[in-house]
Image 1 (spheres, rainbow, N blue to C red):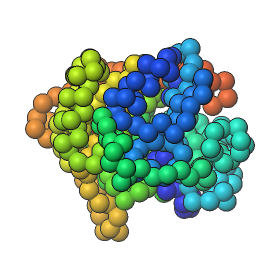
Image 2 (image 1 turned 180 degrees about the vertical axis):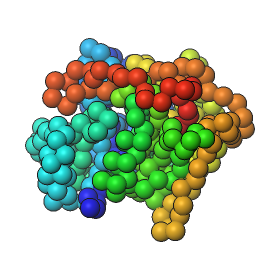
Image 3 (image 1 turned 180 degrees about the horizontal axis):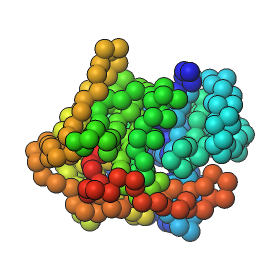
Image 4 (image 1 turned 90 degrees about the horizontal axis):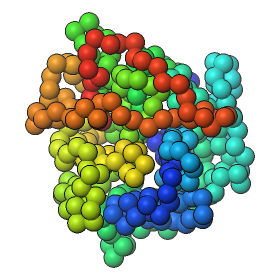
Amino acid sequence: MDFNIIRAARAVLHVQDLEASRKFYVDALGFIETESDDQHIYLRGLEEHNHHSLVLKKEQEPGIEVISYKVQSDGDLEILAKFFDEKGLKTKWVEKGKQKAMGRTLRIQDVSGLPVEFFAKMDVVERMLQRYDLYKGARVQRIDHFNCMVEDVQKAYDFYINELGFACSEYTAAEDDQIWAAWLHRKPSVHDVAFMNGNGPRLHHIGFWLGEPMSLIHTCDVLASMGYTASIERGPGRHGLSNAFFLYLRDPDGHRIELYNGDYLTSDPDFEPIRWDINDKRRQTFWGHEAPDCWFNEASHVLDIDSGKPLEIREPKLKKRKPTFVI
């Protein structure tokens, strides 16, 4: 069944201090602030024409309220709701007007426990792609993907591939062909979502696309000049998986952001997923250097779509090795 899921589209992060978050995301990274109030900041990249792709929501504790995918039409939302109800998964409608700039949305708790939202309509605003006078910081262009830590990657893989119509671009497997990590997409690039083996469900990071590789270097200079050296967790570097350039950052609440550029087209119908052996060090960084332990062990808590409380974290089913790398 094709649900006409288009792409990864937005995320809602709980943060403790809106002004600290604004300084990091707007002043340092260069997101466009579409609008704000005393409880929210709505951000977008320079090429994005929708109202926002990132919401910073003031709460007492950091957390991930929801990660969202855009679909073709409201009719697709109805089909998705029926599908998830039949699967016995938790669903919740959020009516138009209950969220800033959003049409009706469907929220679900997926098979891994992740809070996922689907929507078709969001207010349209001015695209800033050619407003070069407004470019600053990382010059973020658009949201690209989510990375999620889950206890059972195979279960998530099977559901998103066989039930939701995602395709796999690359994956990491052990000698027995157990899948340790997988990169899945709806748009014609390497991924909209990745699943990695680890304590979950948690959100490992949100990836944002930059216009060119030197923007990553420029971002490091900007962050250092503003006193954010401790926020630079990993990189710059080049991934083996996806071939993309990367830089991983931690925001004031510990949420991880990846700045990302340079992957490849996956739209051809005869494209075959690329397999990486778990023992190949080039998979995580093509140049060979390893990620720090915090990159493997730390991630953001995700919330129940009804209660808003953090979900219980479970240990992964595959425990023989250090959790593998995902981008």
